[in-house]
Amino acid sequence: MIRTLLAIAVVSLYLLVVGSVSILLAVLAGGDPRVLYSVGRVGCSLLTRLAGIKVEVRGREHVKPGRTYLFVANHQGNCDPPVLLPVIPRDVRFLLKKELRRVPLLGRIMKLGGFIFIDRKNRNSALEGMEEAVAQMRAGHSFLIFPEGTRSRTGRMGPFKKGPFMMAIQAAVPIIPITISGSFEVMPPAQLKISRGTIRVTFHPAIETRQLRLGQREELLVEVARIIASQLKEHEQPLVSTTS
Image (cartoon, rainbow, N blue to C red; front, side, top):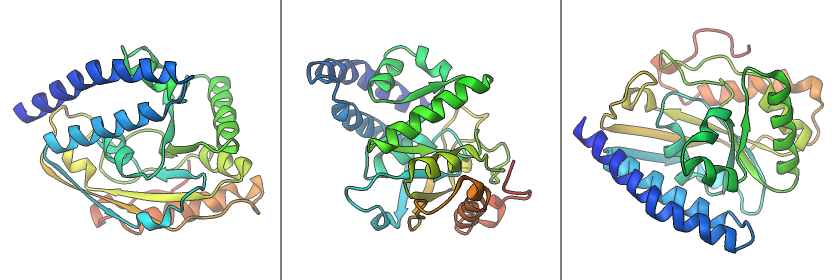
């Protein structure tokens, strides 16, 4: 637990000092968020190293330079975003619950970075957020989405929602499936302590969506879920249908 508290304290101090400067630089650069992403990647890497997390990455060569993607990953635990942000060779944006917008400093950084905040309990808010994400992807900005909608409570992959796959088809951007394995053991959702361990991140080949119709979104969902599950350990495999 001491290691966890040390990691959180150091990263909080880093965010306070470096994050504040990066906001100023982004504003002076006319709202260019690239410096914010660089600061975020360093902060996330710092957190995982101090917490004793080893990250193994496979298949990153599938992410081609200059292309816009929708990255789709399973969601095992609290460490997934800070593990993924530094290893994805892109600046990626997120769809986030609106409550995170109120987090001091971090909320401001995420807003400047182009992240989209939605009210998950409000269907109109969710639809508006998805439409904004589609527009941003058409403009060349990549996104990372966890289609389960929330973290796993058992360590097993849960059902996927159709929304992200509709977004990919509407934006006509390829999907890169990502498998996260080992994250649940390191820090499950209900636990504050970060345990030492190894998290394996596997990037799979891109799936093109340009020729797909919205009516094919469920087929796309099933295929992506199958690919992601293919690199999960036996105790991480889904027990139920991959759709919800």
